[in-house]
Image (cartoon, rainbow, N blue to C red; front, side):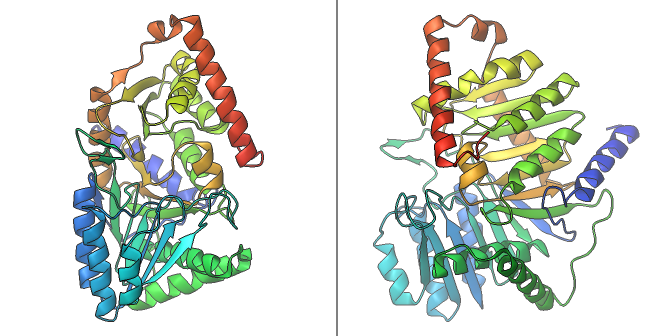
Length: 415
């Protein structure tokens, strides 16, 4: 890369950090980051951390399965609780069914709470879709990987592992993960939304506790310095936090935008931001998962016309299940997390993402997205425009039905 290009990327990263207030992000320096591209690698790291825990383990996940992946994690949690570590687990009432493992947890002293046990529960239709964990204020995990076998797709076995990612982080950002978990833990206990002041106080207590354990304060972020922020969408004080993080980064992109998401149905704000970026000469590529929900597959294709006309390149990935919710912008900004780019994730569900600026792991993620894009089926604009009338009609009807359903579920929040 030229010296001019390096300076431009440094300015890009510095600008994103300087605008953290608008995106409700708190960037910190001095964090370690490790990227995991498969469940197997992630589970091994998670179990190793749990087995080394001395005080506190917490895990929040949408799916926890009693399978070849879930049982070893469950056994590690039981071992930790048995030796006196406080172990807390949050699972979703719909994503995770009633498991025999729960009896083992209770016998070992694991504290387990279920978020919204019914389809329409005390938190409405909302789910906790987060996949986060922390251990002893030393390490935390965030990503899109559920506690489930990489090859399991219900009645089918996938030909390749799910295409998904998670990160392990250490340093000041761990306190942010802990704060989000602790707030969720209390929220489930009391059964209603805590006052925003309670949320803010919980964050202060969590950061103070983590800083005290390390004996130092989080270092300020200098221009061009690697930085990490954790962002949680919670229907409380961070309703648009993840969406805003995307919008800020897309708006400042000058060279390349890579987005990979299984359920690509963003609202107008993100779609318009991608179109504007493509029109100003940015190489915009969107990698989309397929063949999980037929109606959604048809609805998503309705959005292709505007994107293709602006010059956005679209790839439909069918090699295996695309479950990752990731993006890389100008090789200097990346996000990895649980948030899909759809109405449920952006407006309704509880989600969690990590945002990286100027970290080496961004290059690894970028190469993985580009490789997957090469494996995907590229959407040809001419063939798309020439598709039969009945297919165009089906795409439009599916989109209108989806949009109406999301408007209803999000009480008008989806745009």
